[in-house]
Image 1 (cartoon, helix red, strand yellow):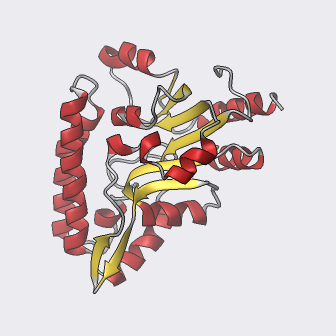
Image 2 (tube, rainbow, N blue to C red; image 1 turned 180 degrees about the vertical axis):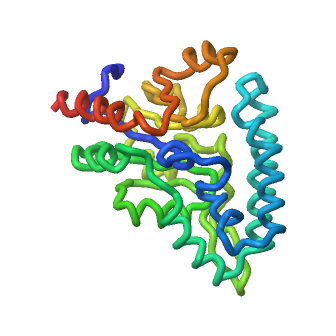
Length: 259
């Protein structure tokens, strides 16, 4: 099942939206809770949905060149953040945090799996190109452990929502984008388990530095025409939000057998 992984040599790296969470169309994620919250204006809902309808098919299309896709994803990231800056005040922000906790649902088995990794001293990195404040609130509300996070952090400056760290785009979620002290601590971890859902998450690690076992968890159906490509790119493909618990439990069981 795993390529030489042990508890001592493994590092767990996970995307958040649609990977650690159940997926429902364009709403239950770290950005989309903002436009989908019940009190959101029709304008923000309309703008957000237009962006999703245009860019999401590009994100999941395996036939698009990676360089071209990266440019589209950068545009998408910038535009959705602009939607937040234009529409979200401090009162709305606080209400969205509560709405996110209630409406972003963690996948079956994720909490147990992450807790097991922490108990066995396997480091956990959570990567996302979306809104860290939402992600952190959801993880803490669900008591899901992590060692390091890499995402876009927002806060208010003179009443306006602003980005307080450097932009994190999808293709920047990799080893080199982590703080130097984090890379030093975990540089001896030679194997990784990678949980992801997007074609651009192929950039979530530097393949020359670490031997990978890659796990693709998604609730979307893969077309027959693209199935072979997915089988080439990913070791395991899960196409359901309901069968993850047994799969993650098998990984956990295998790793614990290496003690």
